[in-house]
Every structure is written in structure tokens, then in C-alpha cells.
Image (cartoon, rainbow, N blue to C red; front, side, top):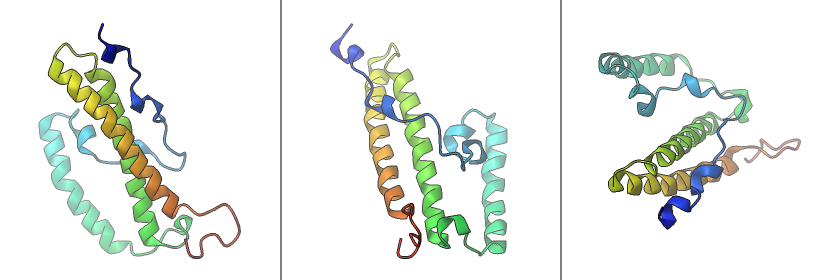
Length: 141
């Protein structure tokens, strides 16, 4: 067993659950679509942009839970996508380092480093948009 095999994955500290108000299974991502039969994934890739356009034209209000800011709401969605990506990369890292191929092992360790960076980016964005827990916190956030 090499020294690398004994190291702990840096991404193993990334939490496995998302904040309660978000449902990870309600998002459409390529890393989810890869598990679908190709014909179904292709159909969803074609349909989803049209649905998003229709919904985007009908919905123009800001969600109050984002302090009345549509931009903050969009950035909150970005945070959740980044967290999902970090968790997915951590999963790829965990399986990759146990592969027989040296290439897959190297890619597993790369995915581990990348997962930590993506999680840090999510934390940075979240710090900018999540209101402090005090009265009037939404003003100027």
C-alpha cells in the first residue's frame, strides 16, 4: 500500500446533506443525467431549456426568503449547485482512488482537491448572500 492510499481524502469533510429548504433531487444536472438511458437524457436536455424559458417569462417576482432580491435568490441556487458538485466530486474521488488504474487513481486525487475548492467557492458566495440573524439584516446585504 502506497503513502497515497493511506492519506485521508481532503473532501471527506464535505457534508453529505444540503440545507433543509433545498431538495437536491429537484435539479437537473449532467452528473444526474449520466445515469439515465441516453434517449431519456437527450429528451430531458431538449425539454428543460424550453420549460425554463416559459417559467422565466411568467415568473418575475423576487422570493421573500432571499430578502426581496432576485439576484440573491439566483446566487443561492448557484451555491446549492456548487455544493452538489462538491459532493459529487467527493464521491468521484472516493471511488477513483480505489480503482486499479493509476490514471483513475490520479484523477481521484484530482477530484478530491477540486471538491475542496468548489466547496470553498460555495462558502464564499454564501457568506455574501445569507443575511445575518438580526433584525434589518436584509437591508444592505
